[in-house]
Image (cartoon, rainbow, N blue to C red; front, side, top):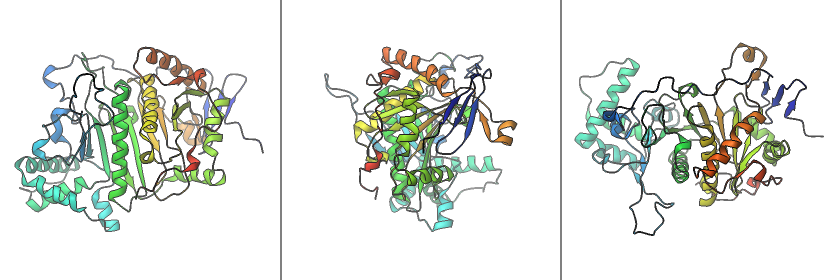
Length: 452
């Protein structure tokens, strides 16, 4: 049987697409494109010097507006002159005491989500999950300090106000310790970047996004997120999948215009992975054949390096750039440092080419912890530049105003310019520079030990 065509260009220029894993049908109808991609800031306002580093609850001067910190990533000490700094190994500080929150500057922080999707109570009630000993100890020590007591009291008051619940005249020590422990054992984390605006920003349109980080900062961002993902799996044996995603700007679901990723531990795989798994069991090479090989034949490869490849995705409701790891290790925590850096570099270049004005969702697709079938680590960056409406709901045919070829042609020139300016990793090979060799994804070898 011949492989089906997933991208079909009609005589009038309409592009019809089918997603090879979900079966989603998408059309780009001639004449419906050419719309503004990002709304941008209509009337930029000058930044208030008094509010620098305090524009939102994720900013550095508002550490106590988020729950107790699980960990933070800081810059290493400056070494003697002539040494490469900051280097690949940035220190991680775990379980920061309330009194030490301002002692160091966190480049990235891992904090529980104040309004979590699945709380500690969910796991406790449904599975009998108990608070890990080290977190229980830290919760007691945290509340034992005046700073910690004030912090937890403030958070409980904020949650009660948001939910419309009455607050007691005073919270007991037991309530405060239980609340601190529930925050620390939450399965819904947020990885928060330091900057709200780029360095030396003059107005509030100059947001700091994933693409405005330096390549090394973005490598650390990804490495730190993978570490958090690993920790969520290890701490709760009932977790079957950790969903990692990044919503950028309010049209993409972000509550704050401050760079952050989210990790949610869940007790199911989700329908999307189950569909992909069915295809994978029928054909272990399906991700090579239906994704990267097909994209190469259709000239939809956007960029690659030795460790990852990016392509203009097809069959998505929104314009989507897909980044695939080439590693033999399906799981991110088993990637070699160079492999992890390679994925981070290509993802960073994708965000840099997209810019900060376009609302985006970044979605990680990884192998669930209880699945043996190897799958490649792949990341989707979706441009939220259209709205699903009545036509889509009735027909299940989705209208995407930017077809894969138009997406490629928008991104590739920007990548060449960014590389020339030194704003992305120089090792990236763009468009026709890419080798496009068949079967570049090596995930079927399944290198690496179990997480446990």
